Image (cartoon, one colour):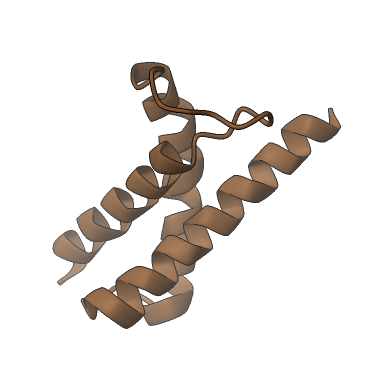
Length: 87
């Protein structure tokens, strides 16, 4: 149970990092600016970590079974998609 909790915490952290990267470095407008991007990034990271990890199983996982690439791609894609829809 603790491993699953730590895995979800890492996915949340990756979603927040993706949101900060999208807002500060890519400089695209997002609904809710940094806070909206963080919420969208967390949702995208958890969904991306769940679905993309099933599709891309050849990538390296750590011992907590969190695929950082899948989480980041899911979060970044979800933030990008919402920014395109809202603006």
